[in-house]
Image (cartoon, rainbow, N blue to C red; front, side, top):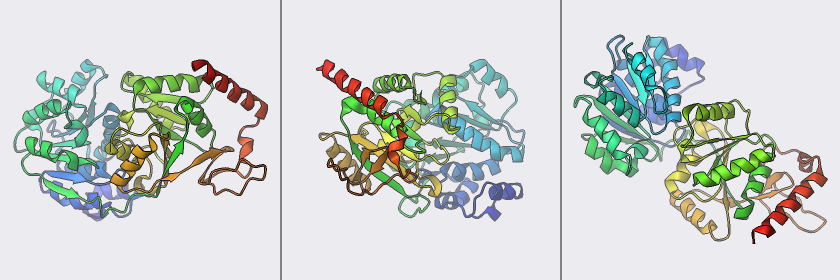
Length: 417
């Protein structure tokens, strides 16, 4: 597939978007989806999977003939992101795209469904609810896509997605996309008849350079580490937590220190989550604290950092979190905060994912790959901070105040024992 394979009205859009050649997954699945085949698309994070399924399927949709394309996503944020991308291309074909997500007003969604939008993008719970109310016309659906399929078909979520697929006409194509779709091939076989597997993981070259580091830092001083990272020049990062309780505690303390941070969590309402994500994308906050709700599919332009506040519980979690940086050829950095007893768990994940890890040190307002000397004459250190200033100590212009804060934190630690 090249841009010339697209409909004429899209060729200018393709060029204006800054695209040249299609990514490998886009090239491989285009003719299959165009021909009405079901596929399982597997490619690295950030390799253009959304457009890989959207472009051929949108071209098959007919204006004014009701609900024809249904896209299921694993989170509200991903649904809204896919909706925006779909609208950018669908409007050139006079097609309507409607998001159907939980947390939004159901009555308003029902009213908008009366306009017979051709493309629906939603989360399984709300979509199934509207199908049961007979507001979504499943008999008209010609194609279904499960984006981040391993999340949608994993244990605990399988029931919702499988019920929806059971209500879709058998002749409708069923396609499944994820960087780790291979993990749920058995589940896919339970809900679809022999889709063709297109796995370009080993061949794809769209991934940018990603640096994988680990920072050994006491767990009780986690907030101090996040505060110091926030002061790095041009730092903006997604900060991942394994548990919601730890996220809330860290956010409260960082806000107390006056840092521009926000959170994106599953227990927040839709408006709060959208406001946090918008502020992050606009560069108004330097750290967005979240759980794995933000690890799937979300695209933040030119994001430089991902920070794991502890070792992820599964290698798939690490892979998808790291996939928020290095998208479509951009460079990025992943930092995992460890302690002596957890570094072995991270190294095990690194071995499983075949990635190279390097220890990094946070000192003097910059990241270094060599441990700082404690002697008065400091050796010249190799900095891994791309845009670090020559005099990094100037990041903290009030050394006395900084010293006082460090002392109070030290005393606070004593009181806990």
